Length: 90
Image (tube, rainbow, N blue to C red; front, side):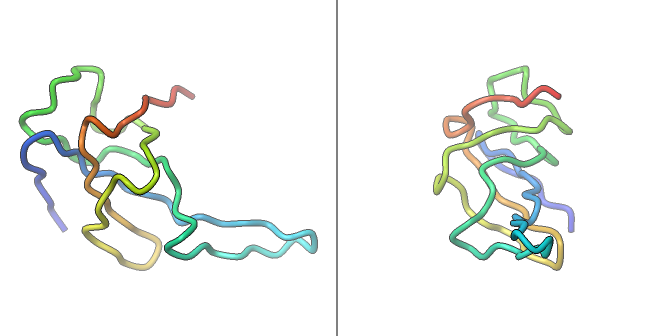
C-alpha cells in the first residue's frame, strides 16, 4: 500500500503491542493498548520540522492519531505534526 499524506500529517507504522506474562507467554494487545510510538514511513508536504525524516522513530500523544490501514503485523496511522512529542534516538 502506497499512502501519501497531505498537509502536516506523517504516516507512522505502529508495531503490534505485546505483553509478556510471568509464564513467558506473549499476549498481543488490542485497540485500547496501542503503542504511542512508531516509525515514520511518509511525510506530508506541509510538515515544518526538518528533523522529522522517513525512518525516524517518534513518540506521539495517545489518542491523537487515526488508524488508516490495518493488516496482520502492520498498522499504519496518520499523526498530525502538532501531536508528535519527539524523536526517539537509539
